[in-house]
Structure formats: C-alpha cells, structure tokens
Amino acid sequence: MPYLAFRTNVALDESAAEDLSRRASATVAAELGKPEGYVMVEVTPGVNLRFGGSTEPAAYLELKSLGLPEERTADLSATLCDLAGEFDIPAERIYIEFAGPARHLWGFRRTTFAG
Image (cartoon, rainbow, N blue to C red; front, side, top):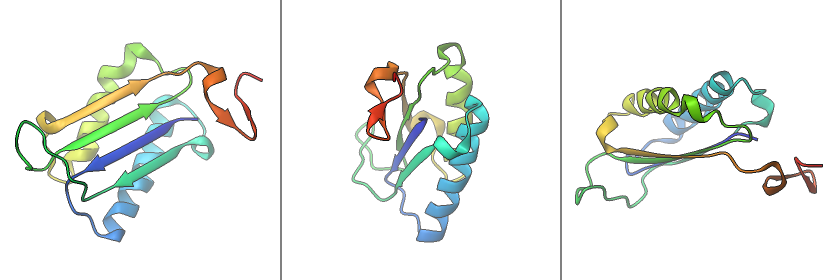
C-alpha cells in the first residue's frame, strides 16, 4: 500500500537505480511500519526536470500510503532527502508530496482496501 515515486533529472545507471529502489523500499517499510511486501517504489532517473529555472540536480518524490502519519511527514521528508542526497541532490532542490488516501480509493486484488 505504500507507494514511493522518485523522479530525478540525475542520470543513474541501472545498478544505481536498482540500489536506490531496494534501499528506498526498505526505508519506506521501516519508517511507516508496514510490511515491505506491500511497498511499491518507482525510480525514474534522467527525466526532463527544471526547478527554480535550473536543470541542476533536483528531484520530485511522492509518498502515498494508507494511514500516512501526518505528524511524521517532517521526519519522513528528512529521511527521503537524505536518501536523495546520496546522489548529490541537495535538499533545497527536492519537493515531496505526501498523501494518505482513503481506503476505498486504493485498489488491490480486484477490490479496494475498504473491503
């Protein structure tokens, strides 16, 4: 149910993208206290992304999860920025969108998490 999209204009080779995906999945599971078996991570490197009029390294992340703890978004932001920082993306060039959809708005196994 947690979904993390990590889009960046930084070019990553396949190995680096796979490593980021693996570590992001484990991080999201641990930070949200959810089984990693439900975590989905999308890593899209090398996108055409301009931030503040510049194409310097930047990233746009989306973290969506049922029951997203809104009181923890600042901590989650710091954790995700640290992860992006390993690829020389400065925290001031990262936007993160957090969303906690209602259970009936998240589909899985031909139904939703509402029932």
